[in-house]
Length: 194
Image (cartoon, rainbow, N blue to C red; front, side, top):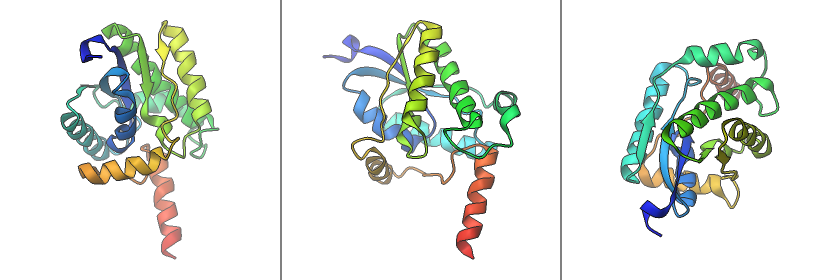
């Protein structure tokens, strides 16, 4: 099957390491276009660093990337009522963040005439794939699209991501992205140092 014959899929990318495995696993079935929308990432220097790594991966894999501007106010407005909650796929804070990013991905998919979208978020062992599936399916239904539901962490996906990140020399961050997850990561680092 040639690239022209494949169905186009918009892949929301949270970071380059998490994109490695979805790119490998989906590229045989879909004509992938990467989609960068990271309003949750804090600070802006971290956002810019992660975006630069996604650009590098796109170049390595010869993929198109669509980039949205940095709009942390979108994230602040969306998760505002849940800022008191800890990081967890089972909490509204994180679910609202997932929904925000998938909603933008679905809108961009419709705008571009794509029928399919998905996200790299399911690669992380810290993200609940069933919750992501539910959000993805709901957003897809709302927009008349198809959500490619795949738990990229399965079949040793996270280990493969580490291996591919080393191969490509990709920066691997140690927190999800938002200012709250950064504070929680710093707290964990301090506890380890005692």
